[in-house]
Length: 162
Image 1 (cartoon, helix red, strand yellow):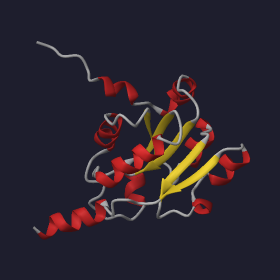
Image 2 (tube, one colour):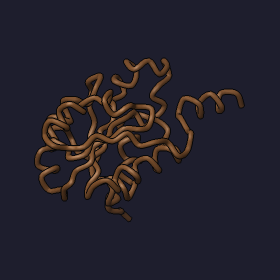
Image 3 (cartoon, rainbow, N blue to C red):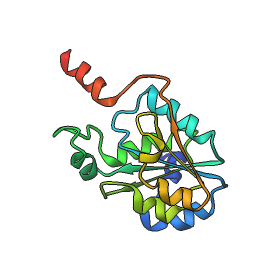
């Protein structure tokens, strides 16, 4: 017996397909990015809040090499890129998931031209990569305060102590 691929797999997008896929999304388009290494309540709450700022939410995920360059630890990411992207795509708040290999998502932001650029509360709006470009086009930049104080790094430290 064979089973069809889960519907969320259709939300996964290669960089080359991004312009076509974004054109099919309803606007306003909200953009966020991150490692999303071990998905937790803080992530899903943040993503739901980001989605509420527009009609579609595009999430750009750091590649495995990009995560390692961020200095999060030699054993990071714990989950490989394809797995991180699939978990994000399975969320109802997420419209499309892509990845980037650069140190910042600036190139993806410039290609997708979001209406709203979002990061978590640890990022002041003026420090968010791509803020200048989005504001110059008349878009908004939002730093969403954390409701649930969670972090993958803290979670991993707790697991390692067990």
